[in-house]
Length: 320
Image (cartoon, rainbow, N blue to C red):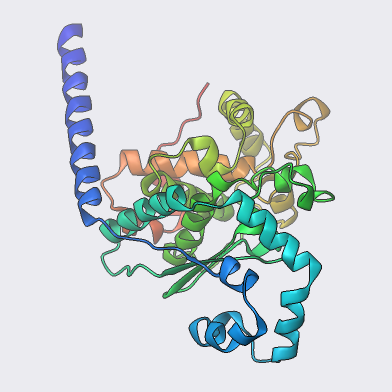
């Protein structure tokens, strides 16, 4: 009997792997071609006489409230020149990142047939890390001065937990996160569970769209931080349940367990100093993953499903 059960699960595993391989082959066959437009270099190497041509090609990067004198002064600005120099050194060749973006777009086209690949444009933003990536229906703008490595001197004065993901490997991850925001339908987020599930949807979306990245990259953790939340998953869950936090509407909980932070705030010294921030996002990820494993629903359906329905049907059990 034991051998029969093992054989059954072995067969399921083989079938699952075969189906997944077939899906990935079909996605690869889509073969979207991406040619990143290096506006950062076009502008950085421009003369004042080049402005009309650049403004015609990239009108959305030249707000009308600024006149030509402003842009000419920016061309001569020492900080702007330094940004161009440093991004040029870090990104002399963009081919590897183009391939990663192509992979993301192929996955998006497979799961969302209405998706049309946008123009992908790199720029600089004077390290505006709150807007590292901007996505619309027709363009995707990547401010690459936010991806020069977390120890770059540009980032002195920025808290370590914020700049920890200022790495080139995170470009495609941040791009996927922005597309997740477009496809997730969750109009109101009132409770801690609502926010946990919202970010759980976003992280599961990355699982599907970026299978070649690591789990740590998708959530923006170091490997040690991921190991910590995995090892303490049962404790975190018990803490939420015992204190009846899931359906609590206190927005201060976002700062404790959802928003970027150096650590999560359990108000327990021995835990807080070891935990990474955003543990609520991680638990939401596990709930959504359990929901997808235990229910026959498509990615599109899940992204539109109510948080309470996902939670109630997930059969989630934390690792012990």
